[in-house]
Length: 194
Image 1 (cartoon, rainbow, N blue to C red):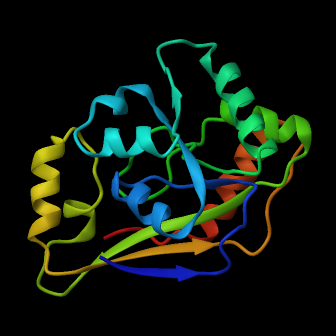
Image 2: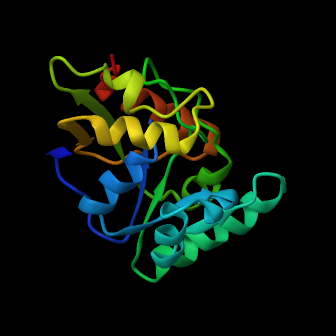
């Protein structure tokens, strides 16, 4: 994987929001930002990635418990107070890369209430000429089993991962407004994966 970073990486403490295309996003961001991730709790049982996430202090979200967002918001606040960076994928799932999914605002509650500036970035991937399109082999969506997807990624000769960090963070007084403004800002920088 060739990694291309555009813009300035935020320094901890920060809250960083980005689009979500694949588990590869986590590996990409892990190489360039100093922070902990928020992830769905069932990821803990994934081979390799689950263990790595556990070892790096991931904040686990139990999606099946509707009020767990309140606990996670408190963990975000505490992580930032300790001087850590926190990375959030507000789409809540990976996508095909043809566009952004709606952002779920629940985990932005603390940032909105505290008027905390939220950094954002757009992630994209490109494959080399002659290889399958990035959407088919790098974006992990549509129920493709992890092992099948990982084999496809490993068959690639090379691919490029791009993370484009915005120059200015976003601030808003409500979580819905904050989610909408972040969605719009990332949408301006996002290049559809095709």
